[in-house]
Length: 477
Image 1 (cartoon, rainbow, N blue to C red):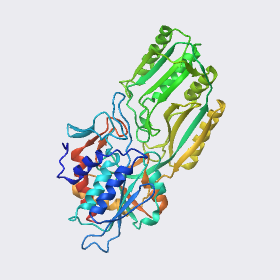
Image 2 (tube, rainbow, N blue to C red; image 1 turned 135 degrees about the horizontal axis):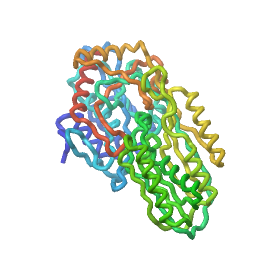
Image 3 (spheres, rainbow, N blue to C red; image 1 turned 90 degrees about the horizontal axis):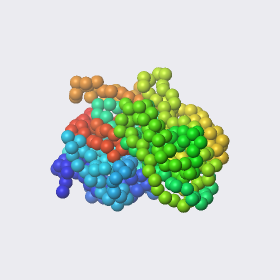
Image 4 (cartoon, rainbow, N blue to C red; image 1 turned 90 degrees about the vertical axis):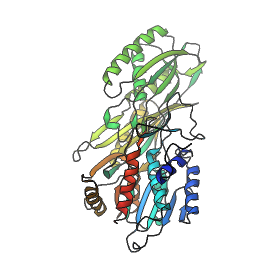
């Protein structure tokens, strides 16, 4: 049974893609669907080895001599779910529901980021009544894990010099610049040993989390850093802490909401618990405005192996000392974060513990310097780093003709001023600008909230209203 009105094309396509698992690195199914739409409607297309797809649509009558427009969005979604959810992102369809005019997915992310952009393009491609120049609709993969699809796309497939990016989450605004970024993976080799001591689990839950670009300046708690802080405090009290397993965060571009640490200790449970409860009160007070639902629990468990005391202390100290969060703000653009890093994922493996970071800045030199900072800290604890997925930023273009046209159109249509914003998030627009230096870029999108979290929701009225605005604007180009 459909949740949305499938007589409306963008609703129908959203229902359909919600049935197809399409997390990062697993976009083949949704790419198959998009390809099938192109074939059904006899549209020329190219699908590359990464599963990026470019679909071409000829200009409508009277628009044959108008310059080509590129529309672009990404196929992958962030797979986040609540701890109690049994959803299998590799196999299960999303469970959509509507509440107070907002579309949600039960217990999981919704994929409105960037399912909205995908559905906008599919609806435009299959509607023969629209007026528009020739179109190049670009569907990319692996955006959420480093803009990989856009980086890998062959730019010779594109002729457009005007681009409308559809990966945007606020109606009535357009983006004017974006941050570059890269990933840093810290690896700490470990030595295991037999364990004959009691085992405890430290559980951090209830944090709000959020996108590590747009929310990094909101001082929200990072579950990995909170766990490291508590464990370091316990060490400083002279307690015996030998780690067994750390599982914190799901994506390095999402502020971690939960962290679970199992450890062995000869210290009595009641003594550790008393200290944890004291730390919990302090941290809850510090985060009462940003994360009022924070909960910290300690409970008993069992395990017959653990990490050596020396390596455990090194890992805890490294996590405690390593920086996280907002580093610098712009001195030119009000409230724009220009340098940050997010300790997104911590995992225990058979012979190592890894800490995965996302670093963001429009300046490559600033990113390199922060990576060097992490490398120095890691080296103190006999760990090493790997830097990957470097992608460029998108600088502000004060002479953008396309943005001027959108500004005038939006004012005339709505009676309101278009909001122009710079973002600390990494966008594929930056990658395409790097490939096509004279590309003129704007962005559009409907209102959505809490992206990259299970609370993600899409304003359905805004979704429909923004689509109408998009197609009417394209008709003026």
